[in-house]
Length: 75
Image 1 (cartoon, helix red, strand yellow):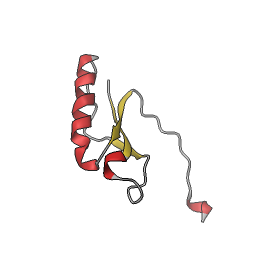
Image 2 (cartoon, rainbow, N blue to C red):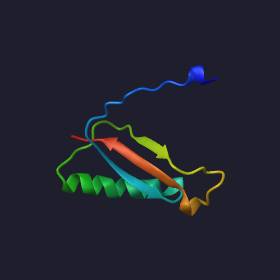
Image 3 (cartoon, rainbow, N blue to C red):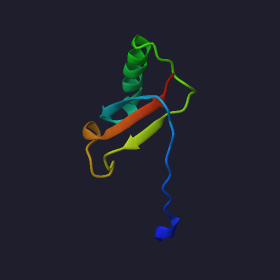
């Protein structure tokens, strides 16, 4: 069972991220906020992919209290 677990070091470089609190459907609003912040700081997004780190169990947490880290690479 534990033989299937792999630990790796990820080298993402410079990133910008936000703690999104609320429904997954509202994530675009948080992405807009970090895009504005990145622009203000003179940073530009690298690629179209992003990472989502779920801090809450969606089956046990009310939608308005779900926490997700949203992150993408910048230069």
